[in-house]
Length: 309
Length: 250
Image (cartoon, rainbow over all chains, first blue to last red; front, side, top):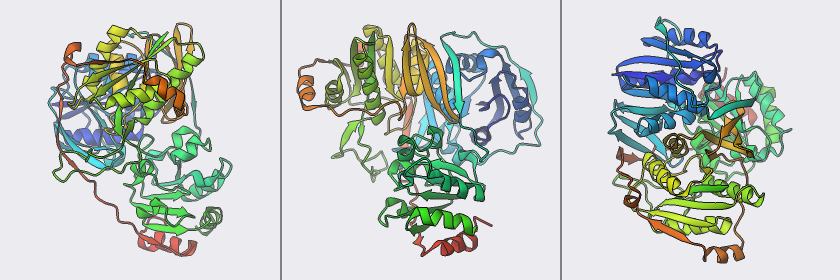
């Protein structure tokens, strides 16, 4: 029994979500190999080889893998799938994009966004925005699994010395082409791996007003998130969204500012260790999950909080 | 150009679901059902492409019980031209849904398939990608912008770091994200007109597709309930709690 874990990376560095996927794969049992598919991704392969418990790193370095396009990447994974019992990826936008394609090409089901491993063929996954947890068993010969990063500890990043092996690229289906990307530039920690997250909602009123959220976040060394309402209103970009269909976070401290607490938002943050809610409406549902609630005007409270830290 | 839109009837997004006492699933009787919100966005996008003169026909497909006809009617009232219901009361998992849709696609030969990125009941986020794989078509998932350009379609995707634009050769599959558009409400005259539109009903067997589940649900449980905490009086009290009680800040 061996798992192949797909590395999530940007050709320069390995994303922390991969470390959670490795931990999940360890719980499934057997050996672990990591696939690094990219272009000029040698540093990523080196980093993957240092993860303790990883037996081998496969590297496919070719132009068609530069941007993780689903069609060539799925073809590659399928070409390598033969010996593996489990194909595992983190449930990030890259993993969610390619793994169902892999599963269908292999004619197996995918188990999406697992939050726990029960055994090699049985997993727990949240459904209905996390309002229910389903325990599901796969009858397929190969298990294709995506992993919710926030519920698995991150594997260590040093101590391992896996062999690195180059693999041949698979034929590129040639039906898709990368055009451009517009990535949010930020010096702040990434939302899904930040120790503290400060999020703003509709109550912020404007994108300009998010400055007070950012000031608080910078004081705390925190990542910045948002509710769907704030993203839909155009206050902040889509990649800030925390929730059922956005990012799932579980930091040590989550500060929700001007967020009412719709089910869909709670789905993305209710596993945080400590939740603080700041809202002018004392009846807002967010207070039902918050450890500490502060009712009042966020435009006074947030700057005051920043100052007092 | 013909567009096929696949939709799912799901528990309404406003309903707080309850897990059944026998742990076999969630309570679905007497619960409000609606079109999956991401699929509404898919219908809207198809209708806008037709209104812009880029599409000629919109076929709405759903897989589910007889009651899913109502959901198809809603999509027809929004601007779909005709519907197909692949009727079954059985649980149809994403891979089987993709296989059924593939069979429908082979009969209908659309140039573009648009569907929601995820159904808000099982939260799988699989069908669009699986359908694209089975057809050998390219996929543009989590779309926030779709632009038809000659023989291709440019899709701007919501990815973890921001936005990414890719170009796909047609025919292609697009799955919708929240910012693609804001779906319209059907007007009363359009709701009346939709009643006259055709909905064909098929059985999965007639399409030659085996929809037997691959995953067995052993149990469905309620997650641990989070206890609501306390309200604090002011910022000083909050900082004190965070430092000395929760110990999450230094």
